[in-house]
Length: 371
Image 1 (cartoon, one colour):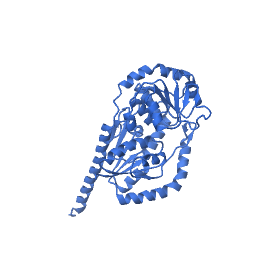
Image 2 (tube, one colour):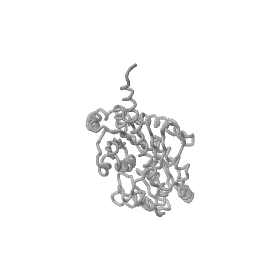
Image 3 (cartoon, one colour):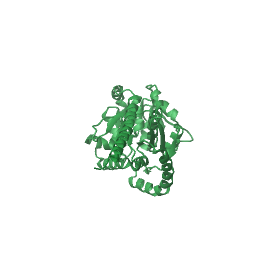
Image 4 (tube, rainbow, N blue to C red):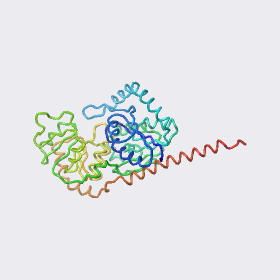
C-alpha cells in the first residue's frame, strides 16, 4: 500500500490540525500514514484519523494578547526535560519498528529530528515558512524588524532540514529559497461545503478587549462574539453584542452568514473568511510577526483592513469600505483543495522516489570493486 508516511503536526492551536487532517486524509487514500502531535491537536485528530500518537510539543506564554518571547522560551525549556524523554522514547520505538519512507511535518520539530537522524526524506507542509522562504518588502515588515528576525529564526529552527517546502497561502510574494512551492489555502470540508450568505451581523473572534467591545456596542451592525474565556452569565445579551459559547457548528454558521469578520491575524480564519467572501478587520497579535504579515497582505489584496487596535473611528472606516472589499473578494480565486493536494502528493512521492534512487546508487558504489 503506497508509502509509509510519518506525519508530524504542531499542537499549538487548531490551524495546523485542520490543515493536516485534510492532507492526511488525502494521503491515506494511497498510503499508510501515522500522525504524531501534541496539545489541542491531539484530541482533534484522534477523533478524525486512524493512527495518532502523542509527542511533546512547545506552547506559548501569553500576557494580555501578547506573546512573551522569553517567557515562552523559559516555559518550554522547563517543561521539555520532564515530558520529552518519555514521549520521545515511546514513539521512537514504535516508529523505528515501522520504518517510514518519508516524513511530512506541519511545523512539528520532532518528526523533523527523526527524519534527519534516520536519513529519511522530509517534506514541510505549512503556512508559517512563508516567513523564511519568501521575500517581504518594507510595506509588509514595517517597523517590526525585530519581530521579523525572531520569527524567521524560530521558523528556521523548527524545521531546518526539509528537502522540500510546500507553503499554503492566500498571497504570493516572491520565493527566495529553492525547493519551495506555494499552493492555495487548504480548507476544511465543512468550509468548502458552506454556501455563503451576505448577512447583517459581524462575526467577531476576540478575547474581549475593552476597546473593541465598546466600539461594537455602538456599531450599526449587531455582533456575535466568540473566543472569550469568561462569558457573561446573567445576561448573554449586551446591547447589540451577543457572546457565543464555543461551537464549531455555530461558529461556521455565523461565519457563513456574516456581513464581515473581526479577528486577529491567524492564518486559518483569515483564509476561511476569504473563501466565504467575508471582508476582514484584522487585529494581529502583538509580538507575533506571522499574524502581522498575514494581516498586511490581506489589506494589500483589498480584502479588508489591518489595525493595531479598534475604536469607533477604525470600525466606522472599515464598515464604510465594505463594498470595496466585496469587489476585491469577488475576484479572489475560487476555493478548493484539489490542486494543492495533488501538488503535495507529487512532492511527497517524488521525495521518496529520489531517496530510493539515491540509496540504489550508493549500494552500486559500495559493491563496485576497488581498483
